[in-house]
Length: 608
Ligand code: ATP
Ligand code: MG
Ligand code: MG
Image (cartoon, rainbow, N blue to C red; front, side, top):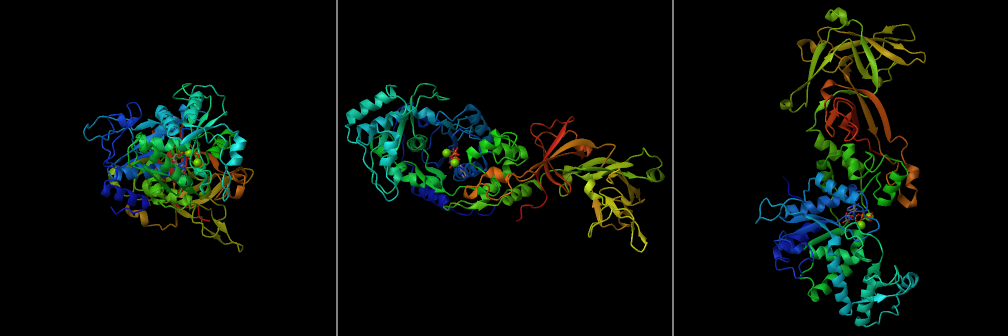
């Protein structure tokens, strides 16, 4: 395999491994403080990374990038990566999201439940943590900061706090509560914790610098009062840590070495470093603490990743739920038929940079899909928009109208070991409606009947091959009252069967796919297209709902060849000439109700 292109994260990791930056770190906390005390955290010298979603929604394509980045880097450098639920905000978090996130990370191939301890091979250590398990430690850290004169309880109103924060280029103003003694602050913090103050009456703030050019360093809030039942800790707490305070501590307790996040958090890094340094100085954590690195988030064309907007699509029923195959959620992409392999390849190719605002073309996602499916998945014939074709001379050729002629085709053209598919040609077959024209447009080489020119000369109907079968000649079509073809008529040309010596005796310009009416299996096809007509649906404050593609889903009732009768949910195929399809994860029932979702066409259709 080619060497992986280097990037700033690899660089940092390689440097730390070389210098043994983390080799000396030993956990200094108390039992119960966090997973560092569990037997499963043996080797501090290892690269240790994490994927830390907040369980307040479903993961989306952007998260696939972050998941790939963290897990694959840790693996590549012989380290570990684990899943952490960043569940410090009780109001928005739910078990439903925890379950879905866990399931999705595992589906992507990162089984964080595997043991990483070489001393205890085969012993499964759960590499799954909950930030809320560290609430005790976080509170102790808060008391330490108060005692060290590094934090204070502020009782300004939210409006006063906002006004006194200042602005870019304009320093803030110290709170009148900033000069309280540590003893006063400690007493007040305990009152906050013990439920003696109403929600919103006070916050704990770090005491740093109200004139800092970085607004995040102007005494950021560490704790707030919020009477809310937490999915893990119930009603034990009525104060909850802020993300900016909690996150660095979570990283430190889990002995993270390289804490990777997206660029929006770059301005938070000084506080991340400040906090962990203070806690190391106080002996609550051991040096060196983890280091934060930021990379440019993944933006994909024609896709929205804001959780709020995705929720709106679901709640206002613009789509059918979080796992609608048009959704950029990972459950949606999975149901659409995307594979973990394709998503990881896409994530890898999208690159790792420190530059924000870059957009990746959706075509790149489809390209990764085609590249991974093409060599692997079975081929099959499907007729999506069926039109009956009747071979009028069938009995003349085969002796009886009920005779069937067995045909076969390779399951995969490049993998003979995958075997052959078998199906029958009979007097009646299903063909695609679009494969027939009364009058052929220029360059149309499929079915059309004899044509009469202006001067009265008649040219014969087209000759085309029924793929894997015979050459036929179109003789006409039977129409309904509106002039729409009900059945196409043709005659079969003897001794032209594919794979026999006579196959090339008649040259044809057109080859069409078909399914024998006698052994076809009825199937539903769900044809998905882009959900938004614009590449950046919410650019420039545009209402993204105004650019929803009204034709993002077309449902057709057609047929597939008999080899698909028992296709299993999530089994993928290339339907010849049509593209890649997957048996729907939920609605497809083998042998009973066949439902196939179009994942992508055979060629890129995203060109501008
Ligand atoms: P919210 O929508 O609530 O802000 P979020 O998108 O930040 O949530 P989290 O659950 O907090 O989602 O994200 C978990 C991890 O995934 C974070 O480390 C975050 O940086 C990363 N992440 C989120 N969106 C993207 C993206 N588009 N590209 C790369 N990484 C992302
Ligand atoms: Mg977030
Ligand atoms: Mg976000």
